[in-house]
Length: 399
Image (cartoon, rainbow, N blue to C red; front, side, top):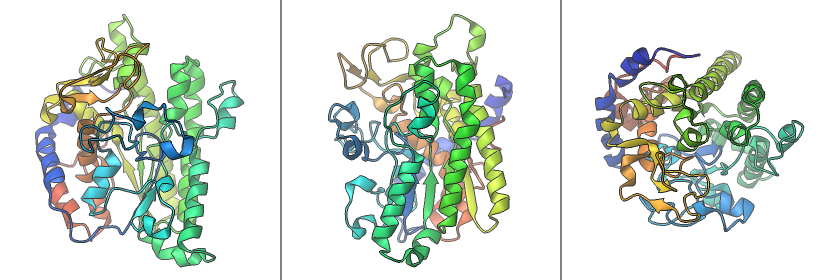
């Protein structure tokens, strides 16, 4: 699963300067006159949650529901697990759409005219019973099957008594299936479930993602984007928990934990193989792999190209070399908040900062880290073609 550090760095940084410049193009572009897709539907976890958590769990103690979360762009906590916008927000904006409505924040059909987001912080791909059967109780958490139930309920609202009437809704929309699966590994790993056991979860997680994609296609979906996992060995919380005195445990060019990144690449390899299988089964459907891993690695390999000075440090947290501690977290205890979050790769030790999300989003929208490149999948998105023309297309991250 591993590849040489020098080869990785060379392949990833050739277009880093052009990529950083084009981020400005993405963020500063005039809004599109017409949306590339009339609506976006999103499924996932805290990397995509735009406000569902507060409604689903009614847990006012969750720090993400209060400042300093949301301080950078919204200037208020919106339920996003970051200081500002997420990849989903940048994608919607680039496509000419408003920010995607959280499903539990709407009630009438008109609330979902431009789509809906079903992602919830802490969500897993697999249902709680899977973990309970293995002696690990994660509680009654949201999972993909539940998010799909909500989606079916929404179709009933949009096309009451006649799901066939939703054919245009399905075949004209963009579906984002993930990022999902990270929490199926995160909590077990952080609670020290043996890594050998967690490794066996990956094929089962991929099978669940695959069955969800198949279900959406069965309902009429024609364009789906499926993100892979992030380089979890670069997450400050993991860097703290799995700190090692062995130099070989770390990647020399990034400082990230080698074995955790190898595991993320293993998940992504299985996912890409399964997406290829699905493409062969559904030739009339466009299934786009979104390489979150490769796009994020640009930040860790060449942070200066994105104006980031501290790629492995949390802006908000408990201090220490990675900005996190065992006893303090962002929004709880005697936490500290940095003065310039745009210079940090992580917001709270588990979730990327808006600056990191912006860089990842450009990597996807510019086509460098989507397969096939998203701009080639629709003829009605001139702004994506413009973004894509400013970036050099790169081969997906070497597995």
